[in-house]
Image 1 (cartoon, one colour):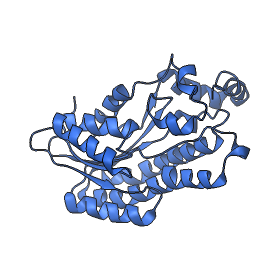
Image 2: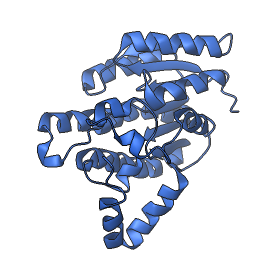
Image 3: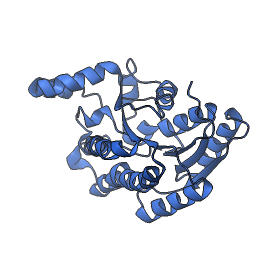
Length: 265
């Protein structure tokens, strides 16, 4: 278990899903949490759980921020640094998906997906990383997806956002290395969270992948125990990491399997 006493962690998308589980597990390790999402009621519930499981002297706060709105993000970061002027870890977990054929997907939804999944993440990272550079240390986690490495039918737009997150993280990792700031990309396959309440219109996807769906609490523990460690990526499940490598080596064969075995939406 990581020792995060006296460390402050910002988690976006903290009201549910991976962000919520990362926040609670970080609290168990003694961290101070700044929880960011839109839903204040859910954020309050997560805050109370962090208080319940966290260290006695830890301090937890939440901020209601729409991660598609650059002005709200800027104000949110300013408020976060008023709460604590030294942020040790940023976990960019905010995001959503949509499992629809691309030509049938409303373009406004696609634009919103890019604003939240990519542009909001990039701006949040820019503002926090600047302060981390001043401190000479820090760790940024960006939640990508195995969809950003292996694209399957009905996820073209969502996969494009996650491929952008992976590429952004790869470049940023190299830029921030000289300043002592780590960048880790998290690329999970399907995780048993409420993400699919929005993404999966038929409600059958999780059941179709139930034999290899990830436990969100277990994934969150692995993420939290990677805090302050120079790790490039967390790719889970491991066989999908291997599949992503083979996809690059034999892309035509990879397309075949993505269109058949991967077509479960």
